[in-house]
Length: 386
Image (cartoon, rainbow, N blue to C red; front, side, top):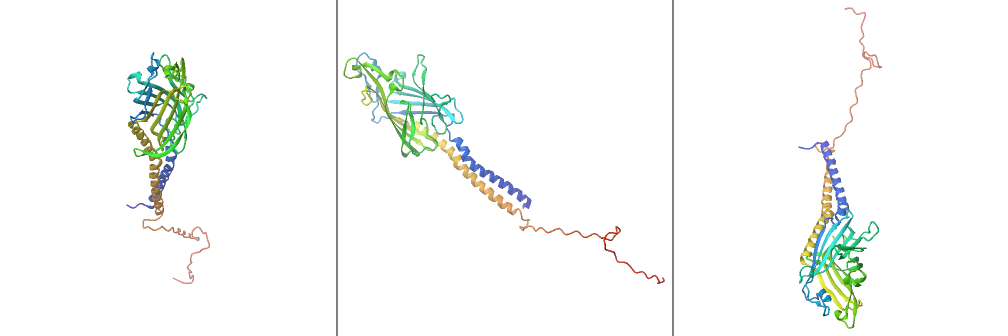
């Protein structure tokens, strides 16, 4: 059944209105929704595991018991299997723009059981911007984070306030091929991490970054009893009599592979060297020397997280705007065409408006006696007889 001209005009207005709304949605979704999605979620929980691959690379660890043994020099074990585990969560205070990250990290040698295998344990806490990943200043003007490497007499972690600067646990949404400031947890300082190359991990495009942490005297960084020791020269295995005081030094070469759209760390690697020495440029007793790399399960898990976020950004940043834009064009074109056709009659011709006929003039000489018009009269012959 054909629509009347009036109905067609109504339908045309509705279609144009829908098209206009779809056009507005196509413009607003990438600017509003994506900006809300391009943030680290507040329910974030990430566990990463790094091991030292048994590929012939050095993996040396100082036997702590040999330092306290009554006789013999310090002993450094070779080919020690290691595992580093980090559990990251989001804590309060956190809001729409900022989040507080807490990361607990342990390093163990797996050839020993329980606490005897624990080498280091660290808790790090920092408040960062949910979009850029950069630390934000504390509201009270104090340090924006804290680090714990020791425990008190009750076994509870002692948190030392520490100002954090630079990236640490994630990179910005839309990572660029450039250098970024990156915070090193052990040195408690920020050094540039430099872009190296674009490559792939399991068919996923990633950016490779590398950072070199210079030799750092840890006794000047944290007040830990293991960062400076005074032991007999024989215990250190050096010439001389009496006690020799040595500080623990640290250096590291860090490599990170980042998925650039989401800033997700897909793979991490650290070449750590800790040693005791009287001078930082002359290592004397190795405390730890090994290369730690994310294991395959961690890499696959990080790829899955990155792809989920990439799909969300693609859906709201590209797919929906394109679909809404195409639908908007269709509705607008159909609505405009239907509106033009709505001005024609059912025969397809544009109706012609004719002027209304003028009303006929009323008689002016009737009983009312108005006007100049007089009806015709009949002449009567008065001399004529019937």
